[in-house]
Image (cartoon, rainbow, N blue to C red; front, top):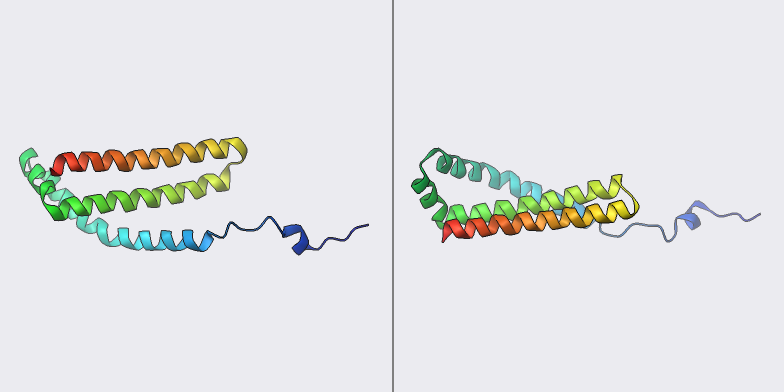
Length: 123
């Protein structure tokens, strides 16, 4: 009879060594969004309540445009990393791979579309 310790059984099945990096990314992006979102909501809310030309003028200024781009990029990357962990935790096999590829693709397409629309508005 062969005796295998718990440690020996666990060798080779360990972590991917990215847990701390992911955790810190999520913490930093959460804090960044906590500071950026109130300012963005105030600016966007004022632009939303005004007419089309006033909203276009508001989003054409540098600070609102840069803040909108930062909120979009940081928010979607936070969405991307959090959703990917959810998929990794609750799916397996080929389904996991397909869902991760679709989710990552969706996240980057949303960033690209948002930035394209912002550039069209700002310029």
